[in-house]
Image 1 (cartoon, one colour):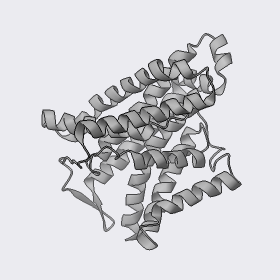
Image 2: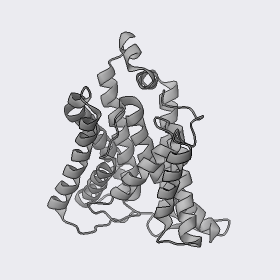
Image 3: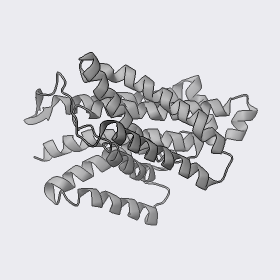
Image 4: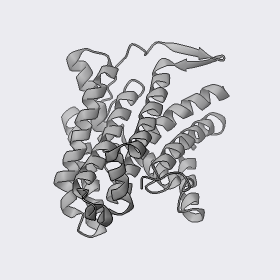
Length: 288
């Protein structure tokens, strides 16, 4: 039972890490909190669902389509809606992303209603036996996918020229501008990458969770806890914190109380703010 709970926690933590890493990347580069991160996950889930319904293919084949559409959507939001308010006070920046989240939630609800929808994949009825622990194939794919994409993100930020530019803007945007980097373009690219990570997570989530307008709300809320525990702007810390929270939540649900499993995460959130507000993993490599 412990092994099954641990693996389930790792899978949930992988989702938290993907969404939280995207949120932390956006904050680290643009210095704005994206309250629409969870709502964007709902868009990705519906894109995956309708892609499957329309094309009759396996949900995992929707991955390139959903990631590209979500990345373009993030690029558009940053370019058209967020860039104009970056020079304004912090309240305006917070309200714009909160308004985007409300608009997305109400639009999906108006278009498709509150009904829960689901899709199946070739792996839906398959399981693996690992050291006597039965693991659903969809969970194994989700965990492996999260590991691959997060590792790729770290390599991209540390080994590529564009990744170096992103880190330079995150560290000091004024100096990056003087060195010839198009800062506003980097802002849009960072937001697009953050949205693309959400799109990747949504494709992995759909075979496991039902699709409905608020499917991303849970992951969006936990993503803020991930950001705080991992350290603001700390991508690696966010990835580790996401996995940590997923494991803690699932083990708590199995051995103590399922009803209180989410509450314990918020208690950890409050404790971190009180006793270590810089985050639990601040010594890990940051975006900058």
